[in-house]
Amino acid sequence: MDKLIRYRTIIKRFISQVAALANRQPTPGVITLPVFDEGRDAYLLTHTGWAGRRRVHGTTLFVRLHEGKIWIEEDWTEEGIANELLNAGIPKSDIVLAFQHPEERPLTEFAVA
Image (tube, rainbow, N blue to C red):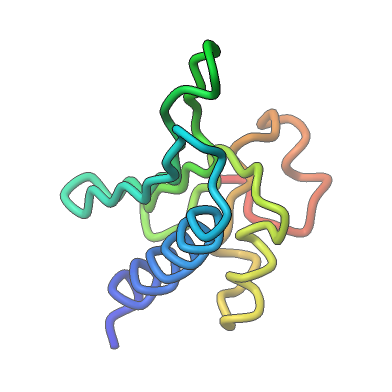
């Protein structure tokens, strides 16, 4: 299987599983949505709706494929997608913790860019 197809499959599976789990016991009036844009290789997990009189919206997870690597732009999941990617056999050299400042990335075991 082509590397990018494999990466897309793993990312979409994880996001779909987290969305399904969140929607099993949802906050009334709030829905969690997986959003997949394969044309731009951008993958999100977002939530939106109303909890009483309070507007609820935000991104729980944002991952994109860029230059053959997985860029984790934002991750507020309990499990952490980086752990899922590592468990799926994706090397740390193909995972960028983009939510970290570029000067801090060399201090991790993951790719810097």
